[in-house]
Length: 298
Image 1 (cartoon, rainbow, N blue to C red):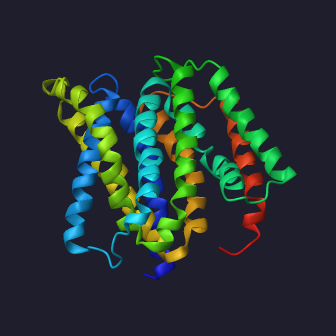
Image 2 (cartoon, one colour):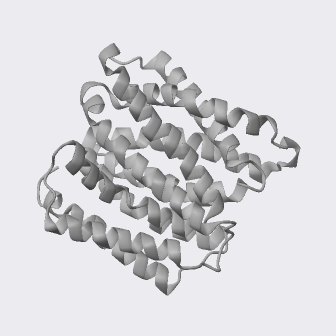
Image 3 (tube, helix red, strand yellow):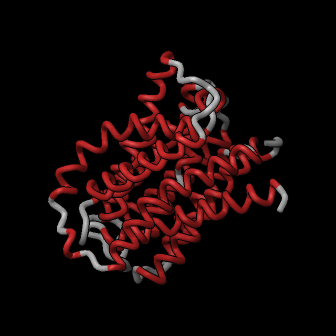
């Protein structure tokens, strides 16, 4: 198997896992486990696995204390806000809504990069931003009768905030990825992010009625904790190292497709006309803000 084929396969499988995780999270939250308790389990398991991996692959570059502030900010935006808002948001809204709103990350990345890194902001990007905002607004304002959503508007807003926070993280983490290996960066970001998440999630985890879990719930919990976090992150890093971040990032567009398929099979959701319109606007927005990048080699 060629290296590029391995990389494309890794990226596709990673996004398949990410896409399926929406339905998996919805299956156990908030009915069986509080979203913050799930965050505790997810981060604790992933953090443990990353440090076990450290025993076999410690990394070639020594940690530089001058990078600590950037690691802290990345831990806050990429782990604390991202994880807490994502799980809580998905538990309140529907799978299809949350997956489409998460797709706004590439749009926000372009806008944030234009602000922080002084990258050019063109009319085309402005139109793309307007399309993305329009699609997100349709999802937030329109009522959805399919799927289980206890507070769709709040859930949509939390997922959208998660997408913005994750976009900040992806922009801020670039210098760290250039200096350290991907696994090193993830290990330290999860370590620092755990300081913010574990104290918040611990009380909810201790109050969880674990006796109510059957084999299906334990299986889904293990899937979310191990596969949709640790395994998916490793596959993404492997793909980035082989084919670059641009080519790997393009696979994010498959996530809503996978999420919608799993949602229709397992959570009883269905795809409506307004969701189609919102999806077209968001996809168009993502394309327009990245149109110039797509003409350049990765």
